[in-house]
Length: 247
Ligand SMILES: N[C@@H](CCC(=O)N[C@@H](CS)C(=O)NCC(=O)O)C(=O)O
Image (cartoon, rainbow, N blue to C red; front, side, top):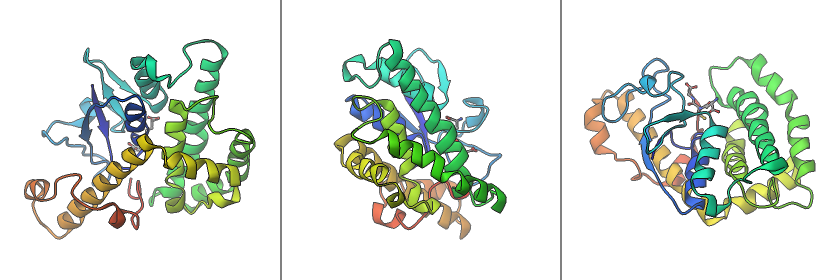
């Protein structure tokens, strides 16, 4: 299985799900920041041929099928490791899972965090997203009353939710306004699979930032790619930099 990812982007949710399941994948890094019209993979191939949207995540199955869209990729991983119980198999609970995956994808990820994080989104889009914070986060906060997870146990929806909540400080969203969401995020961040995945993503993010800074200074890409391998830089550096900031 190959997973196309960008550091600290939404594709981190699938890395979390894989680690929760005791699995892994070949992680292929896609630079989604440098140029919106160019998506060159480390082997020189064009990522648009993998996903015509140029977005992460995309997953290549062992059978060579390409799957895109977070809710689908996450459910594929959950179904690939049934013993990990990352998704209810069927029935109303499976629909509840899909309800939360779609809520996170549409209301939080795309309609809230992307306009707030993307430096090119207009002020009106940011204001509109901000105006919707109380209803969206209020709904989540109400649901989390007396609950440790979105469903009855940890699921791929939690992997996705913790991934987007991790962007809150960079988006100027103060989770302390929703105490249950805040507590949920703090607790889930400490789960071993979540902590491991986010630490690896943070290292990869810092390395990518280093490459981009050096590129701006005019050093050739190939030289840089070998000079600063992913995973080398430290997480602390990246905490001062916003993920998804220049899409
Ligand atoms: N509808 C897609 C959206 C994925 C998405 O927005 N990915 C972002 C990273 S979090 C991305 O690749 N952005 C680059 C771009 O839109 O060009 C999904 O749910 O998977």
